[in-house]
Image 1: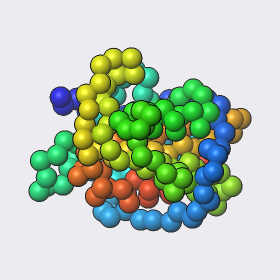
Image 2 (image 1 turned 30 degrees about the vertical axis):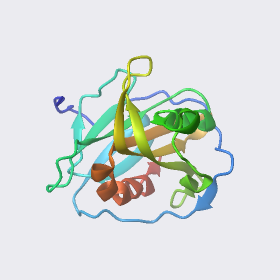
Image 3 (image 1 turned 45 degrees about the horizontal axis):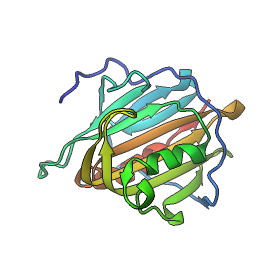
Image 4 (image 1 turned 60 degrees about the horizontal axis):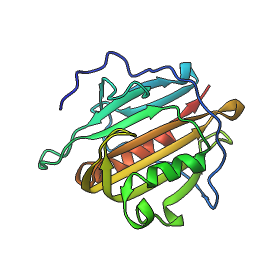
Length: 198
């Protein structure tokens, strides 16, 4: 179902407590977009600024709990569905939220086959802020938190959790068919690398 474009990609949010995910790896993140055109996202009441590809369309969020949502079209030669990038605040620790994302995939013990290598922490440029990055593939259980789920084979989730001041955090979640997400994985990481804290 297509949702109408949202007039603004600058949601307000109340950020919630978090702590670092155990066993995370510290890596560097320095990337550029595959396309030159960008759009600026102003998040967290102006405290967080991100640059995203201009082709990622701002749409009305599918849920009231979301702060904002972007729709990412599949490649021109693909008949896959679009991917969704959601931006929101969430309760609980970083560890708990990562486990919640894992549980959204079908697999052993209700999660995807996620290894320690898939959980990384990177430092934002010119700051000491560390961002937790998550990359998962498998059968995604699509649906509302307390509603029925539809299994979606060959899906991929890219997530980023950004801690802010006073124990707060901001959550980015890109999910969709691997055929749609794979070509924009570097663009997602470039967007996270572009984040500025104010």
